[in-house]
Image 1 (cartoon, rainbow, N blue to C red):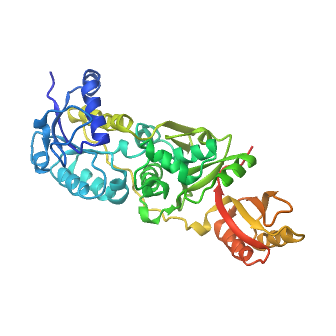
Image 2 (cartoon, rainbow, N blue to C red):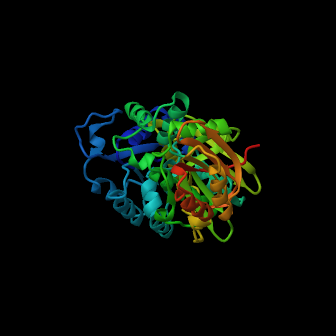
Length: 430
């Protein structure tokens, strides 16, 4: 039998347990595909006596990272701890010691990935991170390899299962955000502190990774526009449905040639769009390339086995190359295009406001839009005879700075009680 590839595993939580389970249950097929057995040699944990989701020999467990980093027999370090530190420190040391690295850590890749990728290139080792975005969906490899001949013009993704589950429950049941969040937490889809998910940060980390691969540029995550779903209400979802849209938290990236735009926010998309049918905790990434046209990747975006599947796929790739040839470049991020300011980004907008029901109100609001060069695609008025009434607008495509200028003027009109919500719209209805 070929010499085993010895692996050091950092972390034995949800994803780590999935990795162990796949290595145990699929051992024979993995050997056929990798050409060499994949064997766990040491596993770093915080507590040696904690009850585990998988059965492993106690001899494999350690609380000392040195037991993995100092072991010359360990060729690959797999990191599934999460967070930036101490994971960054451990992986940097592993790369300096010419150990290959596989990670599922999207926050680490988004914030500190490029220095680690550069270090991997200098050391001549793999740094693979398929599991960092969209769980078991093979989107990283597709962008890096399968679509390498394309110029990717844009990508849009539902890449956070927690928020997609919440918005799905709100749409199906009329639940409030708070009710849907409590249900997501009860089912284990949301953390006790859901901020990273519902405020859009998790999706932003993943968007930065996808954009670096799709557009070949490095963008600091702190410069990405991020807006979460806390402000979305069942009322907005109902109006969106009436207008022919659904509401999703989208991660959007567009390559404009000289610049790129990256943004995460709630979005109305047409009911006919492929992403509109992605529900519950599922993820999907919609891509447009100049050669392949439109593609969509769909599947489970989180969980022990889907994410573990992506980790083990990276391990198989490492094993295949250890005996056969040179390591491929860790990253194709060869430029640093500027990020288009949000004020210059163009989009359609959904607007919901409460106004007095009397003659001339709509004309004054339309006048404010006109002065800011905002044209309207549709208007809905509900609640005649009841003060205040609701007005809902969908604009034609307009620069965000123009819309903000119009809204500043509209807020000052005595006939306007409140602007209740503003949500961007992507994709023209057929």
